[in-house]
Length: 109
Image 1 (cartoon, one colour):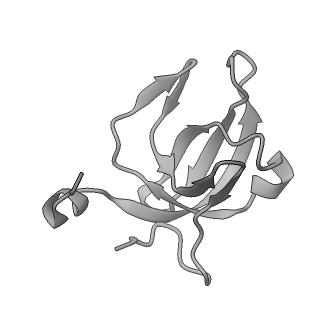
Image 2 (cartoon, rainbow, N blue to C red; image 1 turned 60 degrees about the vertical axis):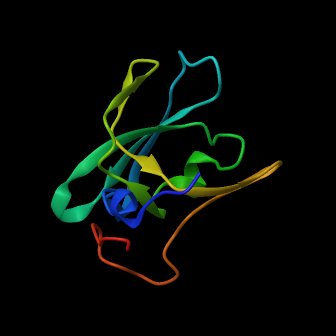
């Protein structure tokens, strides 16, 4: 499926920093709840099933890239407001991060 550049341009992708990581104990699958600081646009909540790939300690303070203009979605009672980008292979996952320090909230184009 092809996506036009106009459709792609509607995504608001930004640099953020994970400032809080908690378990979501009521989830059937192992999930974390994240608070991600996007600088001038504020902090957003995200739910993610990446417990098998990262510990809380590895995630806290990590700089990430996320789509911040998705419709909020309830995931086992947590309102997820954004989605972190990752590369996924059959047995591994890696969060997408900038290769050098960038200010929080920087747009990814």
